[in-house]
Amino acid sequence: MTAYLITGAKIVGGDVADLLIENGKIVAVGTNLDAPKDAETIDAQGLIALPGLVDLHTHLREPGREDAETVLTGTRAAALGGFTAVFAMANTDPVADTAGVVEQVWRLGRDAGYADVYPIGAVTVGRKGTQLAELGAMADSAARVRVFSDDGDCVWDAALMRRALEYVKAFDGVIAQHAQEPRLTQGAQMNEGALSGVLGLTGWPSVAEEAIIARDILLNAHVGSKLHICHLSTKGSVEIVRAAKKRGFEVTAEVTPHHLLLTEDLAASYNPVYKVNPPLRTKDDVEAVREGLADGTIDIVATDHAPHPVEDKDCEWSAAAFGMLGLETALSVVQQAMIDTKLMTWADVADRMSYRPAAIGQVGGEHGRPLEAGAPANLVLVDLAAERTVVPGESASLSRNTPFDGMTLPGKVVATFLRGTATVLDGKLAR
Image (cartoon, rainbow, N blue to C red; front, side, top):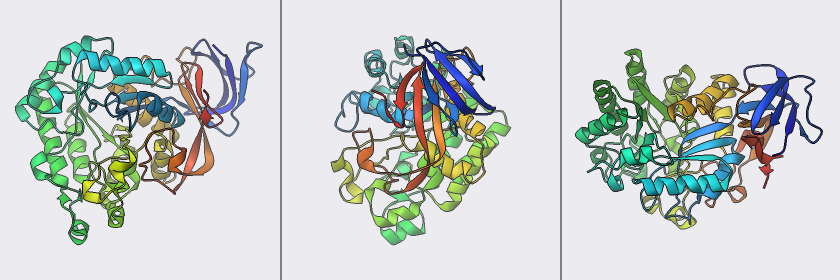
């Protein structure tokens, strides 16, 4: 294993310092460090060093939709985005609702070696919402699943949701809910409002999200388990979660990069690259989720990286699949939406994109650790002054459905290290 001496980096939350990496760990942080003769030196002057990012919401598509993404290509995209760990959603084919499937995904991630892959198990069999999946078996498997979600579908049955919360409580698990009341969103295509009427697209009301969030917070308060809200997107949802936290209820929530930056106005182009679940919302909603992320009401940023093959997006809006790419652009979008607007600091970003998601996903021993001696060498070096124009064809993902196509975004990941092994160097994959 190569030893690295990283010199002159701005350590997030601290001073400019050098970092010495050996045998997968940070062995020293300071100045004038004694490094092995064969250590590779990386000049990090002008760069900020962040703990490796953790994404609690990634779609890797394998098994079953390897035409859209594989664990290998998805984790390569993750590394380029500064991520050292991703949680893979269960909507694969077959669904990740058994110990066998989650172990397959976990092993694929281990073999790829670009980021640690933690499978998320389905809450219900086949994600059909009628019968609990093998939650205990997945928790006891080699993948040690602790987060469960039917993401892409809501666990709409209140009694079943209650049972799921009760079941995972036994091993300190988390239910991550895709908050969408299905009867309020049948045929929905975009955010419900004046624009949806003008465009002639079936509207997706905010209350469809907010009603499920409110219900599940109350259910979880009754059960005393752990509830996580996926891709929160409306002003009303922020207010509900904020009120719940003030009352001491145990709930966490995430927001996606695209909901921090993009608005429903993009639907006027009828370009299906902007079709996503939940839909892009209003400017007021964007401002509310930014404020919620800044004040900690929303705990984390999660990408909801959702790759699709060209034919699933290169079609009319109504026939197109929901979803956007997110891993390679997430940090830049957060920089533009939250840092450049002075709503957050880089220490806040480390908290929302590394420390807290690792804690929610219960992988804090390996990921989401401050950059200090003794910690696993999971880190990312970022050039904050750089700019880049997003070109879909340059993505490591198999898919090209990025909503940021042609946009110039701030910041660039220069290097990513997973347990001391460079996965990205000079802004490119290291192997």
